[in-house]
Image (cartoon, rainbow, N blue to C red; front, side, top):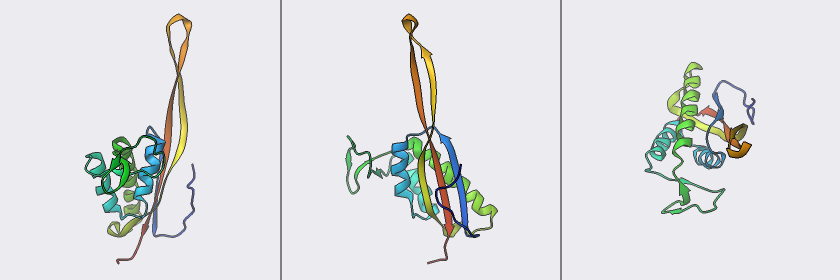
Length: 149
């Protein structure tokens, strides 16, 4: 797998989550709300989403999404927040390994892409079978170290 953007230099740390069993629609909306955030703020935000204290604003795939006060249509994608938090922690560990200052890390790029489709068949009555399809998602994160503002 390769990243969708190329960065060069020593002020960047990258991480990639491959074939995660989460929803692509929820992951796209959650990644958009995290882009540009400071790393510590993003981790706190994901913890609040997992505890259902903050809703994620949805900008895409809005069919039958309820309105939340202050943000508009949104949901609490708990499973997606858990997996994206693991990828962010992995990127933070990669930044520490490169001797970057973890207090000044920002999410420069985060994206969700469709992964492989898990196809299996389950037997049914009368000699038939039914297909089981599970979509998977790739998450890519690039952190950037900025000077103190």
